[in-house]
Image (cartoon, helix red, strand yellow):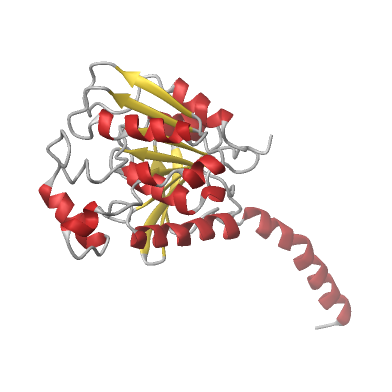
Length: 277
């Protein structure tokens, strides 16, 4: 090939190369399988050998805020949808029915590192604990108060002696309590009942960090008794100087969860989340 022809060919390739790069598919923001969740991109992948998922907003809010949901993904998702519409990422990790035990929290720690260090999400997510999900979010916050912006609990379990233990006014769940003993590696029921790190017992680090709390509760909850869980937690948290908002659904039982209009929940999270504003 003559030098002039070779030079012409090199110039032509150089001119066309950017066109190929423009046509290339942009790299997805998260690994794994992409699918649709209520009109938003969902990514399913594994971290620490555990299934996890992220729902990405169409436009990411400043500061890359996120809502970390514990348990029952996609049940009463009104709050989650509203937050994703406002630029939040929605995160869930499938750690099984493990009641916020230390092993589950170890998987959460791996996911937190992955999302904050490798994908730049906010260092202080909002936590969402529905029913038994309360054990996960409060156990995480107690151990990592610097890694939480606020907590939203919906009829949350705040003391496993109440549920699934059934040691109060509620019936509890014998099967779940047996599984809880295994998950926490308790050698006996007596050891579980003497445990002093249930959410109602372990609030000082949250209060010191000034983490705001919101609970949405039915005062007739027959599964997770309101008086044994939220009432005790609120009284103790405020005594420690913490701030807690209670949205009480009078006459409501454990179900239905959430609010048909999630505006008060969404506004609480927006007001208490650092969105880089």
